Length: 451
Image (cartoon, rainbow, N blue to C red; front, side, top):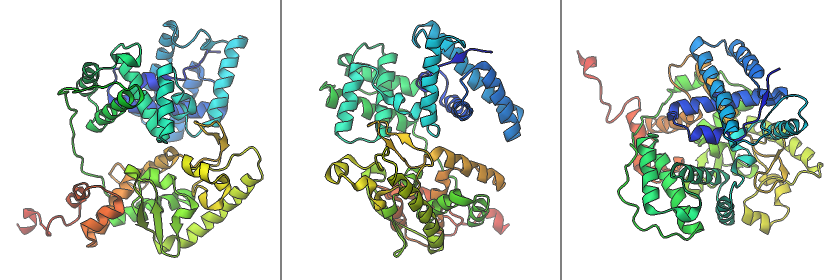
């Protein structure tokens, strides 16, 4: 029997590796899938279980050889790097163990328990992923939580801070300076070749850490190398393709996709809907705290009314079961509201519209709650539906939002109205959809049509 591997910080190590971003993302998907498979079967991570997983995945997906090789490469990186981390003393002496080693077994038992709690949100998004690893990180988290910043923002800021400290070989936050920050931003653009949005996020994160947390005045950062900003034409389905795509979904996933398409929601906005946000009488959805912290109103199709009422009946039954469980703390609420209204977490109106089937632990408070479903499973089903529909396009959940905007413009809706419905800050962002309309511009035809 092969040894069990405990490598809880694999995602952080992978993100800071020399691999390009495309390979890194592919490895993350494969490793998360493997960890989820292990957690579901209550198995530890080992070479034997990895071989069994690859054989199972090949049969399950009827995968081609190139896909199997990609999975093998990702898992090979996982185990080789885990062994190297242990050899360097960064994992702890009990991170690899054989059966009969009581101390090692305790470590893996703790890992298995955590993976069961976060079975739908493994590894780099679990609570352990953002726990402070130093006094500096503790201070950063404390300031962000005082300001009520989002959990994803906490993860991103801590990740950029750790990467800066590692890449620039800094020992504490007091050593952060404008030249060090410039060198790090140059590294992101030239060596890592990240997107411009990633570089901007890193800049915002580290300026916040320096100025707001540690009161370091950076001054002029200097003329750092800017990452390339390449504008992409959005992938859009025609109306017929949309009908074909929706026909490949069923149950809750079908309702989720229809609501996202009907209202033009981002996937995060879809997942965070609460019962009170849907107004069936007015056929509207109130999108709260969208991108940039802005609220807006989005349309809701009358065709979905019956399906939504049926879904709400199921959610209500689950909610009433939770009320009988004294261990549950109620739904998560914004901190200010939770302080003002102590019992709002058990108010039906504030419950998630898409509640998870599993109970999980609040990463910031440690309380047991029923969170909303996480986007990963939904996004995977959307991709599968696109393939099953035979579409020669890469269909993602965001394709539904792109299609919503394009179809409205094709139907003659004013672009400013579409801008408001999408929640875009600038009309220039919305104008990208004019390039993929079936009749762009003023009905320009190809010259080949007139030959």
